[in-house]
Length: 181
Image (cartoon, rainbow, N blue to C red):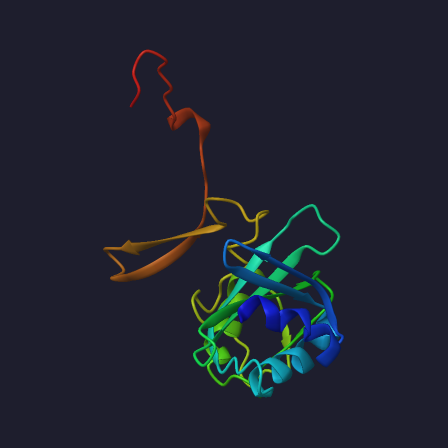
């Protein structure tokens, strides 16, 4: 039933860019402007009933026209099927928040914003959730440095945590070819 119902999906709402199915994974790619309409149809249509949002994740494609992808994974318990919906954007475009459709998207949208810098328009409380208040940059982007920009350490005489600019000196690194560690 799962494969048969997607063959008529374009007749019901013709906003799907692409559809693919491999190894039991159904994937829809929709445009940014059609995301809300697609998710409303998939949640409320009698044939689909995708009532549960199980995950939202971000992907960074650093050298592509659309640098970022947002992946929504939804579940239909009635039909026992999962569906992955992909939306692509770049640094200047915004993605519509789906909190009006799936209320549990609040945390995941904030997490994707914090890690990738993807802005969700009409989100009621879009702020950093996993990093510190003064954190600069987005740590899951592929162009973010591996060591970060600052280092936090506990200063024993001052009895509190201090932040300092990170300094990596090359002379402290000893490379010996004859030993592995």
